[in-house]
Image (tube, one colour):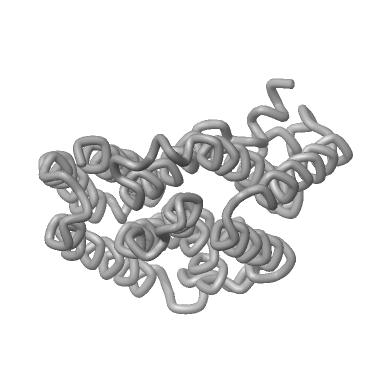
Length: 271
């Protein structure tokens, strides 16, 4: 069971659920309790969707992971291909079934995300930067989905953009880290070279930092957001100094994203 729990990547799932809840909180404000049942359904949809996506990703990457990540459940033999596929199908069934109980806009976002996830695993993953963009769209759509659950997705567009930019940066850094093992993927570091890939990371991080005050300017979040987002911005900028060590840079970016999510939560809760 531990191996299959690793396939789900529970910390990623928790971050995903938190992102959707923040989107709902920003969109609904003090009316959030009125959407309690839809929020519960939304959390189930996000957690099952992300579990299915993570397991499917490991299934399609199991041969590559023998080189890049041999300790993962499938290449190490701690989980079976059949067991992983069963997990994927079960989680997809739960995700799609529960999503049909949600408001129409939430159903649309969920179905679009499902299409992007399948397209990613069946082809876009090996298309390099197009795959990075797809994963980044999915990361940003967590906030849109949260807003759609309470019928107010437009107010979460800024959060979507900030999450998108941060995820683009981390995805490209991960490709730099895995450049030797990515023999069947035309990643940005392979096609454009590592220096240009680093330039893309830098541009995405700087853009995210520059745009980070926008939720305050639009009066979407409480000023408490500012105190935490300053720390997140500092961490994002500091991660650029570690681009020579992509593994360290990836960890720093992941930590920065966690602090950024905390900023969203602080600003949303205090609204």
